Image (cartoon, rainbow, N blue to C red; front, side):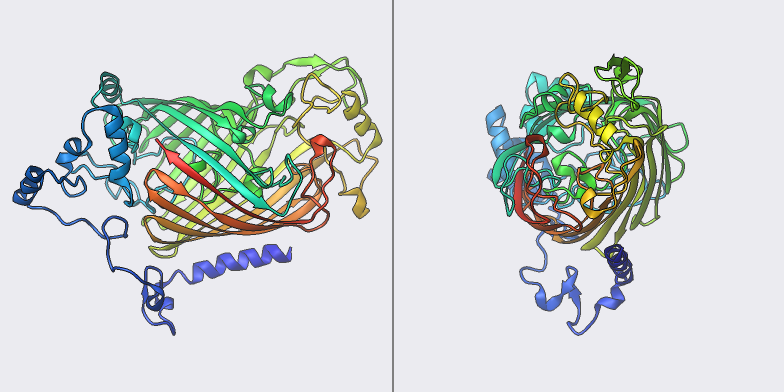
Length: 592
């Protein structure tokens, strides 16, 4: 608990130093969030510096530039098409070149306002680049009050614009875009595959891999307007090693649960949306499969500060399938009621039974539920944002039901909090508790035997259900090697607790530096497979070459505080041999 105290003390310190008056110290005046003595380079570059606009051309200057043939769309947007040309390949190439070294796309001065007036929504707290978002994340909806249909900056859509397909897409408001994200790591761990586990996403040490290739096909509702009901949808297939962190049991899951393939396919998002502006200040109804709320991190690579995820997020809930509402009560308050069939669960598993080859005291009949966690589940979230957008708090209970042992039936309760220190510094904090009831006890001989003979829904001894990557049993009472194991209980309630902090410094729109610290408690080994507490710290740099290309190098130190948890592979019968790891890693994200 001492590390928890240190983490909370650091959070309090960050709030205290948010007063800029405290920043004038022995270093003198501050610039770009750092002492002036540390800052180098030109005072203002409109391509990427904050609060630095391009000069406005007079009509005469704009006309002269257009006639010269040396068009710069950042100075004169009207000449964008002349700069890009008309054929697909040329436009695609020139758009990448145009945005190179800039922190944003050229701004269209005739575009409608991108957000409602200030009295209806707080100001945008961040810019992207360099952050993974412009609004503090709360999830479960197209952002309320700040989204225009077909507003994503996409080289593919720009290249398609003059074609018949591009014109049809523009008329319907549909966009197709995505990214490819390869990555790699250098680690003190050596076991392949999976030696970095329980760390993700680069769970295999000393390798280069395709983490994810993602395509979004979507139409987003216009949530700025308030005079008509609007609609949207998203289908988002993914391929790569990261599929193991997005899938739901029963949907494309054979590749992971039966074959344990390195690369796989999933569709983590497939939903429709209806936006009703007449309810309060706007209500969004989302139906389908969607990312769980709220969380600082997300499965999709561009939505994160760093490449390697925190342990907190690795063992978090990922997706829900059901109906999620977001209702803006005022400019400060949003509520998020929802109903789903659990976490990482599919509706066709609700009530579905499978044969029980080995009846036992836990599952005594000849059949058992295929996924006992697939059942009606309820979500409620509440989000508060300050008038100036500098503070944001979202509290959520996600996918709650009776909490019985299921594939990933996590009773999630926690909150995220964001705070802007100044224009260059901000932090993000998350804490949650997850629990599950009636989890079979790995320290009990009867329960362990049932697992080995196929008598549990996700038994390792049942080759027709989840021979790989099923949910862990609980080491009730703790790890046997520590002397606290309870061998008499057949089941117990297992839980995990996490504290996660990101501190970010961004000197301009092309760079952000991140310090991450976390403390994660898994006392029954129910989530990570090892009954231990974890502490980690990592430092990362997110560098954008343009709004379409991002590189994220980082280095992290990870520690298992009680027993070894790293450099093993339980699927191959290799026990963990190390209680620490150092991992240097990086990915690169190419947007299209």
